[in-house]
Length: 296
Image 1: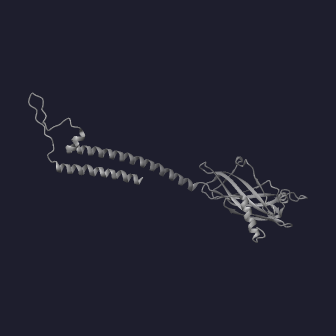
Image 2 (image 1 turned 180 degrees about the vertical axis):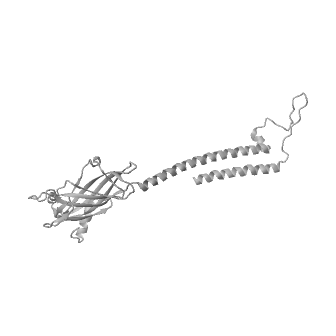
Image 3 (image 1 turned 120 degrees about the vertical axis):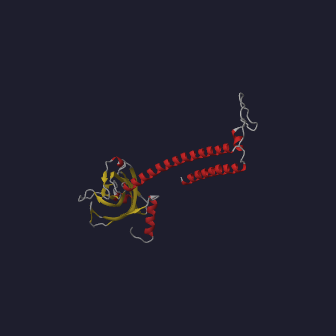
């Protein structure tokens, strides 16, 4: 907007300088250019002085008569002033709307809810502990969602998708998610600055998978994607996802106590950027193992 206003006022100054400067120079060069008219005789029609030419067009008179020339300059100046005033009003109105919209956006951004997955873990455990023979183990995914915004988050829902890779001569993986209708589940609210923990068991039989893949029965590479959605106080539906990667090792004979039950598995997940290919991530782990790392 400042650039446009500069152009308008430059044109205005140019027209003003041309009008007054031209009129002043003309008045000096033609001090006696005012045409004379003869007095009408009594009882007869007035006879015009031959010097007067009433049929001359306005543009020709403007080049001969300083008054007409000045009138033309004033008209041009008035037109430019009107255009510049209208342009200034339009620009001011547009700028005002933009300013209001930007202030509203900034205000909403400062007070809305911001939810993220602060932590995630996977525990392989049997759903029927103490049963002989023990049932197969399934992954239990636990997350911690945190609202770092200044207003509550409403209807928070999430969906974990896990991919387990076997380590061995064959390259195999198995994927599972909580369900395709996870967005239809009634969510929960997370207050400003609060955390919410939740968990879900995914339909993977890890022991059967390791036997079928002929891999190491005590090592599993894990990729985890957590999709989540929530609403802020402005009824805006926000969707995001986070990724984690890590490993799990079985320690036969040991009892490892967790907040969801006892297991023989231990492991760790770390947050990562969105992988282009989960299989490529597995190959990266295998390369690290071949370079001397005996366990993830």
